[in-house]
Structure formats: C-alpha cells, structure tokens
Length: 324
Image (tube, rainbow, N blue to C red; front, side, top):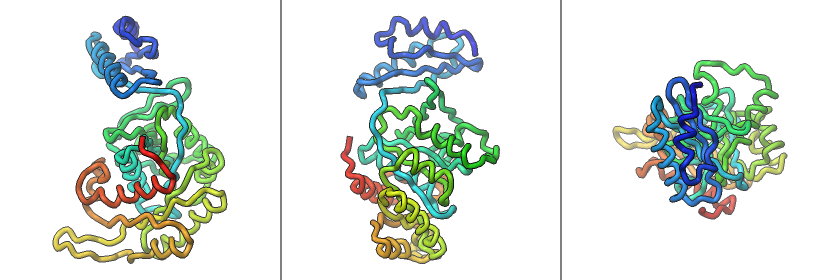
C-alpha cells in the first residue's frame, strides 16, 4: 500500500464525507473507497458516487477508482438452486434467474456456493474482479447486469484446486451468504450438486425461503433430482418448483427440434411429486455461446431470454414477491 492521505484530503470537503470510509491506494494506483448510502435514493447515491470518483481520479498516482456502496442490512430471502447431480446446467440457470428477477424489479444478489467448481465469475463476466472487505465482511462486486455477486472463484486463483473437507466448505459458504448484501432483498444461491455438507449447512444455518430444482429430462438425472427434492422436503424448505433444462435441441441450420435427453420427464416428475413445474429451457447453442462469453441470455431481449423470464415470474409468484 502507498500513502492514502491525499485521497482523504481530496474527499474531506465533500458534502456527505462522513459517509465515506478511509480510502486506500494500492501500489499499482488503484484507489478503493467504501460509501455508506443508507437512506439515500438512487439519484443521491449516483451523485455522491460520481463526485467521489471525480475527485479521486484527479489525485496524482491514481490509475483506477474502485468504489463499493453499502447500506444497513435489509431483510432478505434466499432461493436455493439445487440439483441432484452435476452437468444439468444449474449454474447457468442460477445466473439467468438472478438477472431475470432483477429485470422484474426485485433487488437480487447472486451467491456462487458451488465451492469446488465456481463458474459464476465466467457466466457473469466478472473474472479477475476481487471483492473488498469491511468490518470483517466481504463486499459483493457489482456485475454489469446490476446483480451483486460473490463467488469462491473471486477469492482463489482459477487453476487452484480446493481440496477442502466439509467444515471448511461450509465455513466458506457462511462468509459468502453473511456478506454485506445491504439493500438486496433476494439472494439466489447456486449450490453444488448433490446432497452433502454444503447443502446441509445452507438449510440449517441460512434457512432458504424456497428451493428451485434443476434437472434434464432423462431418467437418470430425475432420479438424483428426486433425492434433492427429498432433502429439502425433509428439512421443511418449500420447493418452488422443478426446471427441465436442455429440453429439446433446436438445429441452428434447419430449425428442427430433437430431444437427445428426452422430453417432458421433469414435468411428469413434478406432477408425480406434487410440486410446481417452472418451465423448460432448450438445449440451444446460442445459450451455450452466450454463457461462455459472460453474456447471460436473460439480460437480452431476444427469444433466448423468454424461458428464464417466465421461470423467474413463477418463482416470484411462489414466494409472493412484490416488485420494489
């Protein structure tokens, strides 16, 4: 770290200076500052941020300004997105669900609780961004899609293996969920596949308001999805519904639809178990390409966004959410 005194001097005469934590300047010229925006409306928050950024940018040696807004903790509800097995598109569904809920007017955050295989930084175009901490709490980074996010993938090197036992993984989950989420009303939590320690810690310590289960249509995936549903049912966590992912492949050349994983299996399973069916997401190469590029389809206005927005509307209705 270098001398941060010039940063404090630049902000000292700013109206609202009491809302600004002591800024820091790193050796590579990055100025980090935390604003307490409790009680401010959007216009006042934006005005304060603009003024702070402008003043810090004029300080000699400042190459970049990183700013985080915080506020008093608001009551929020957690949505657990789970699957009985990996490879069914749970993380892609989580990212797009969070964005779709945000587009529907709900103040939504995203927790990448897939400790051993975090993929949200890539999906949300936030690779390389590191969260700051304040009063021993992590501060989520704000993605370009208006959804704040925390992921273990932001805290460790991409190529580093996390050979952690259950208690360490559960502790990491606690740090992500108990971060400074401020005015966020909803947290979408992307859980790892299966029914292990992280899922049990989530249920026992953080008590989700509901669970969304993701499966492909094939029987093998549905067997494992039923186990995940049973875990949440046993713990008394409401099942918001089942999503059928990779439901039909649309040929990009002729438009013909085929069903390599079958069709309708998740809807039939939902009916058998007496839980809501939230909808289908096709096996579409456009979704895969957009996800790899950090451009979740739910953020766009084309047909690829439609299934995610429809699922988000049903999830919001299941939780009786009102738009902010």
